[in-house]
Amino acid sequence: MKKRMPGPTRGLSSRRDTVALLGALCLFLSALEYLVPKPLPFFRLGLSNLPILLGLPFLSPGDLILLLILKVLGQGLINGTLVSHVFLFSLAGSSASLGVMAFVRYVGKDRVSMVGVSLAGAMASSLVQLFLAIVLVFGQSAVVIAPLALGSGWISGLIIGIFAERFARSSQFLAALKSHYRDSPP
Amino acid sequence: MLPVKSLYPLDITIAAVFLALIISAMFFTVGANRGTAYAEAETAEGVYYLPLDKDGELTVHGPIGETLIRVKDGAAQIVDSDCRDKICVTMGQISRPAAWTACLPNRVFLRITAKGGRNSEEADAGAY
Amino acid sequence: MTRKKRRDYISALAAPAPRFLFGLAALPGFFLVDRLLFLVLLVLYYGAWVLAAGKRIQWGYFIFFTVSVTFFHLLTPLGRVIVEIGMFKITEGALRSGLLRGLGLTGMVFISLASIHPALKIPGLPGDLLGRCFYYFDRILEEKHKITWKNFFASLDTLLLSQVNAYNKALKTDIAVPKTGSLRAAFCQFGLIWGIICTLPPWLVWILTR
Image (cartoon, rainbow over all chains, first blue to last red; front, top):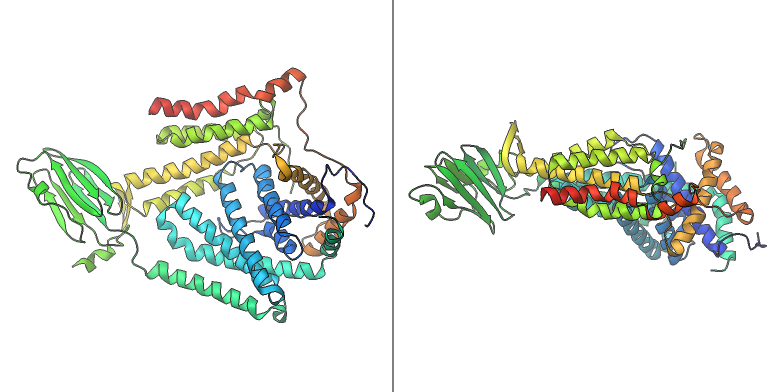
């Protein structure tokens, strides 16, 4: 792994390649989630947040933002929702989530697991999206759905956190990716 | 499943804080008497609603002509009517729940519903 | 997860960039339309173009979406009462604003679905990296049969690990842009026909119904 061929990376360092691969995982997981029937019409598990959660401990802040952009733009292009309110919801929710997750990790350091980080991120995302839904879509009467929206956010945050914690502990892929990232020039 | 021992106190704290937030959101949305009062106009054409928290105008038609209702700064008023005496216009603004004004010749009855009445009548009883 | 390739007729009319820009230009005009009947017609019109783009529409989802948006708007009564069902009043103004919002957002998604082609070039570093990202995405999709539900994370891990090890062998790829004759390619470059199809109708409706 130490020997890197120049390769057709189109001027991208292989450190950025790590971000691209994690971004691809986001897109794959979001496509996968599309296939699984939803228990509630508006309920989403948010599997595509998993790679961001996994990258949080080792990616630089700039690369994390890049990963977020890849996830949101990639979904917008593949699903074709780039110029619709769906894109705005996704961008706002993901950004809030990343910001809060980075904050929780920064404050909690090694005293917080993926579960806590994921929960906080999911709640930030749910709150922002709920706010947008009330202002842009449903109108003020929709505050009645707040407990349901936040409750489902809490549950999905917990589930994604458990997935991430389990995956991070056992994954050889993640270990290889981490060492690849650390060995590569920024 | 994830063994509980791999969770840190901070994880539990985060989970608990947000759970508390959700539960309080539940009480807030169920228990709170939120929403605005409405100006309810009974007319020959039917019943009209105008929220008091939004300025607006409404022209309704009665047996002798038009009646103009205006909501401004949280108060409703009949500002013009095709009646002879214009008593309704001189009755002025109403804004308190259960307050009313009317243009009887044109069969327009305007009253304020209780706050939080929203799409229901249940709160009206409390107005008296 | 079968990605059935259906024919995208719009790609013969416009390259991804003008296709996107004309879609963007249609949006303000579309949101200015405030006649319900015309709005419904426009939504169906763009729905037809989504199908022409070879994409599927989940009608059930969009109907449910519009109905639920309308329902929440009805909770705040506005204007004349049309029907009263028990304590629930359906008012003219609320029904109108709810349908306008629900149909408006549905139409916006349809315009987006019709005018976004995955090969749309995004400028700058994110755009460059997105090309790599799509490359890996396709690689993962090619090997998705190696993933089993029973052993989901372990099999996913193995698949991803093989991608890490394949880093240096990676070849440059781009999403295939449909090849056309040079005259047609030049014609696609401006996509004027798509401009007339996509951008003109809502603006025309707005001007005529103003």
